[in-house]
Length: 173
Image (cartoon, rainbow, N blue to C red; front, side, top):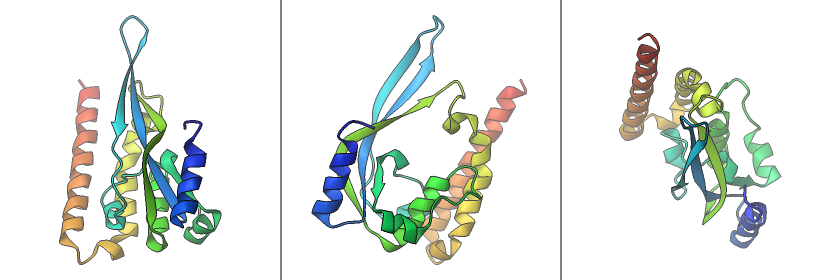
């Protein structure tokens, strides 16, 4: 994160009298080129305003952008280690059950995704499917009765399943 990240989020929590705040960030995609250099594409990750129900469909707040008061995290519970991936998303859902989040519309951090499978976003992609299903099942009591959420969840599962199958097909060629 950037040097002003912690101060700006803490100031926002105090100013807005909130227990949780998050900011915007950059996503830097790193791709090795043929000459050995790394090409970087830096794009703003447009974080949406806080909508708790949106967490039941997707993880829209990168954990690096989040700050929460200790009490809020203790009340929600720490990372659920039964998740191999998506443990941050799970914690965000639990935090959102009892807290509103303040959205600081300022870039205070960046995260990187490497295309060479050396980070969890790409290297552990196969674990995402089981974890996504597990997460949706854990919070199905919140999604029941909302056909739009259930439809999007089902679509997300199908899309990830298709993406993973496509990747396996490419490996078998």
